[in-house]
Length: 240
Image (cartoon, rainbow, N blue to C red; front, top):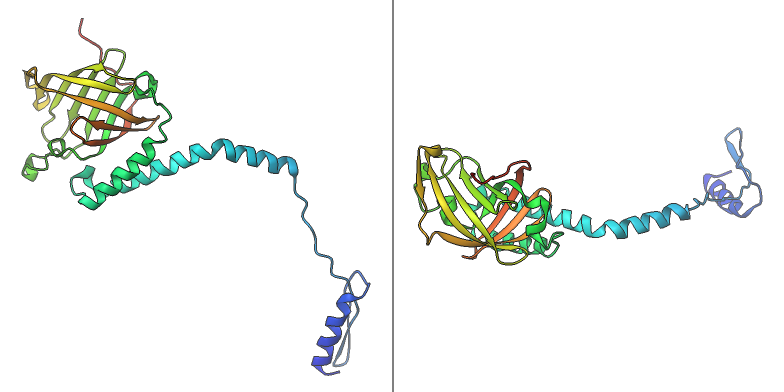
């Protein structure tokens, strides 16, 4: 039988009633018995499906927030804390920060235990903190930290290499998320010299987003700060 005829006969057999295919050979001729094609249908576990739906609904905001946080951290990772960020990159980062701020899980930031500890600066638009106008040799090259302790209403900004400068400050809450900052003492070269800050050395800070590992803040001069948690146990007790 020609191959075309064999193929035609095989196709016509799909409508027959046999439940299993059987192939028989006789010389150069192949005979195909008829069979019925019954695709296997997978049954859904309704209990599991319903559980997944409810789980997805419950976790969706958390997943969305994690994606927004990852996008922000990825964008700032290529800017050397903001030092080499272009105006276009700054605009994109600011919008990513605003997206995350809208999802702040702790609107009452100052009452949130997660705010306390030492935070590492990951990005800022503050040229003075970055030393943007200074020759490269005088810019901070090591990590920059900020410690907040709401139990004593104190804060500390601390540079590492190369000069190890620091400044202590008192905090005065002005809302559930914002504080006035009064700088008190500048510490030069790791404490070799300490200088009392003048009365006009003050500022303000609004903690617009905080969770267990990322904090976003905005200063009174419009600067944006993004920090990551470094040491949850760090505190700033007041001297007796």
